[in-house]
Image (cartoon, helix red, strand yellow):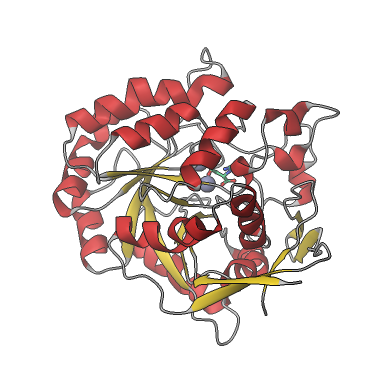
Length: 347
Ligand SMILES: NC(=O)N[C@@H](CC(=O)O)C(=O)O
Ligand SMILES: [Zn+2]
Ligand SMILES: [Zn+2]
């Protein structure tokens, strides 16, 4: 017997669309299921100014499949020379919905990020004043800190002091991967939230490293021990308004993933919704899926919820997904959960 489940159309609160041929290849994958997405600004060169965000938004809209109502929600890449007035103007016009902070060197295309947090104090104060959220890649970059500890150390040494220094700053802890991240997000008020990816609900570090190295499971922050994955599952399926979906779907062509120095990023845009239905059903929490994908994010970003819906159907036989999508930049491997998935989005 098939089972079906309808929810308000989801949004993705952390998405990489890239540019050019890659943008054209991956955008339809997200636009098929999601109404809106927060678009990450880590292009080369990064999207720093309001004018650059507007031009990037226009390239995204031009690349949309005909008839798609998908709405890109733009962000600015915070640098040490970002102008608070430019940020305020881009937010006031409705163009920009958040500012993204990458600690310099923390992840893909983050070299223009922040080294000295004192230099961005003025922008962050302006953001607190106008209520514009700061999205954070929360990992320290100190080579002496173990890569599996970088998120927890960031919370203690950077995030908590930053929030004390700038009261009222609205912060999204992006792609949390640890029980420490879950606990810190829970400790905040309504000025603090956290996104959780699809893949971090499914894999732990063994998936990357045991039985041969699996480059398509490598992303940043890197997946941690099983107890952390379980903490993320508990948070995502709790219904707690501070947790919502940010897929961090981050396409890289296979040639750069299957490489001596492979890029970080999992591509989940294609099958995220069926995978989440699987995970939430396993946790006996299908009734909390809509909060995670479609309600908590808009509430934090102070945007209306979507009026259209999406229907997920559970079939008796496992459903198939493309192993790769073919873009003009090259093939991109779709995240493989490693188990049969019976859920499918109704066409
Ligand atoms: N998550 C990743 O592993 N990679 C992202 C960058 C990021 O979100 O940290 C990318 O842009 O490829
Ligand atoms: Zn990141
Ligand atoms: Zn990302």
